[in-house]
Amino acid sequence: MQDRKIELNDPVDEHRALHETESRIALAGHPLHAMLVAFPIALTMSVFGTDLLYWWTGDAFWARAAGWAAFGGFLMGVIAGITGTVELLVVRGIRNRSASWTHFILAVMLLSIMGANWAHRIGDYVAAVLPFGLILSAIAAGLTAVTGWHGGKLVFDYQIGTKMPDEKP
Image (cartoon, one colour):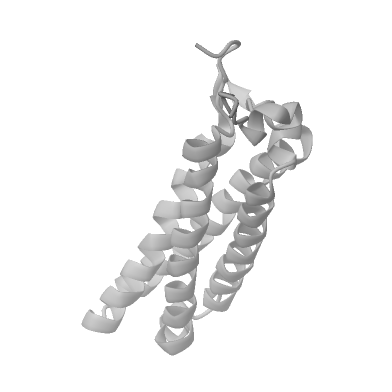
């Protein structure tokens, strides 16, 4: 028997197209998409929380707060979505990963629900909460968690949007 050492290769190392993951839409080296997504995430969760508070208290303040949070969440989601879409289409290493497209599809679904939730509240924000507004808020909150998990996976597992070192140690 021969004493041969079997060498395993990392498939990512073999595909140079997956290495280009640094953000191109950045401010002083900080990716804009990563900075902007905090706003729609927080506002979407706020809509769900204020809807629950309206249901619990019946105070119209919470319904009005939910309406404004729905507007802000949708607006900031669109802005964050534009920066994320540009990154997806421009950066080859992001575009070549199927996980990036999964995150993109989930984010578009989420923006659709957030837009519907905001549009539903225009006019009579108090009557819009129960039951349809609360249902939309719950769906949006759940989908925000799933979409955010996928986005975090892109950053932490695949280093998407981060600067990669030039050489391996």
